[in-house]
Image (cartoon, rainbow, N blue to C red; front, side):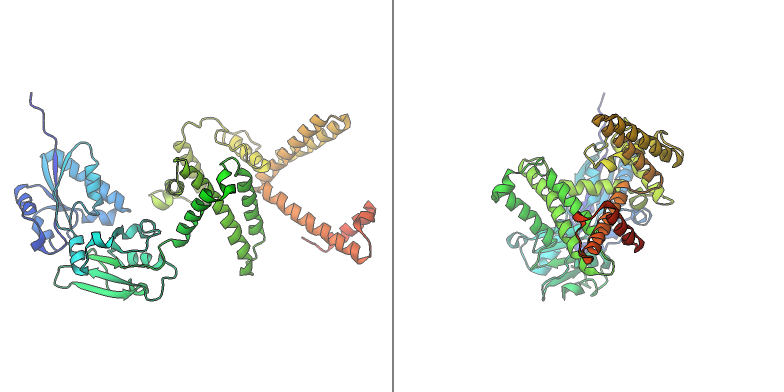
Length: 486
């Protein structure tokens, strides 16, 4: 029995634009294979493909390029199975910045034959008069410029700058480019209306109407893209390698500093004054200290060959995209409540091994937060009071039990009952949709302000708090309260 041959997709390139640059091999395949597909007809050499199916409609109907490319690969694969052999033609070269080709090559049920072709790169080197190897050029995709070009100062050839908004995003990736920084717009290379235009950095998106035949040449940058983050990352590496104290640290030894910096960020947030931009400085500083803790952990892990800061940022990026289908997908929500419900459902699907009610609950959380989260988990399975009356009654009950334990003089019983009382109070706060941690912190702030005001009144009377009776202090306290010191 003869083994049936696998379907074949012949992938060819239509060159950078000038029909004279299309190879004889490509023309032969286009004439030989009757079933032909074209990624887009928006290309000067597209007519050479003759009567074929294009995928221009997908760019309008699908929300992301990746979905477009995936659908192209699916349709071509189906056709290959139906006809045995098909041709797929793309602009330029099929081996240069062609994501649809990558999708096809990843398929396991077809054979792909990729035929080299002249790419836009050849025309770019001709127009610029440079040898890319000797010049050390980096090729960057305009859609991911701020990421792919991070830390790089050039030279760079930026592709996929097919619209002015792409150029605008590139322009804004550097806050303050050095004076005199210029770029070169490469437009319709090799065609009669070819334009090679040198412009100032801030003019790149305002000089011409960019299209699919537009590229960007960046000879050099005085400041690299994402320079501050790149410098910060290198600083963490340097300190880890050269500072004796940093060298000794481990993930475990840094925990206390991570907590300290987190609480200092909270303090800075609570000190923010919307009317005073100067209060932003403390928050900037404290957020920086917290960010360094993340970089420090990444530097340790990178040194051990376990993971890097890129793994951290990529993971949280992908997780947030997946958990926001109403932003990055086709889901719709009616409000924040439904967003939270979707979040929990997606989170549960991501980690199916967590089947218990309290699986994944961080036991090292602050106690008030831990109590709140535990009560939330129990409420999801119906173990909850129907309204706040239940928790309020529980507070009264637990208060009485604290009194009884105190009368018995049993320290362990007192400790246990005080814990139950606090747990009940957290339940009251949760039922009122109040964060117990924030509420208690606010109460401490009020208490501190009032005690300081009492001290000021005592000093004004020529007295010290430590020498006053409780009744005298209580009288000053009431005076302070009547002034609504908060």
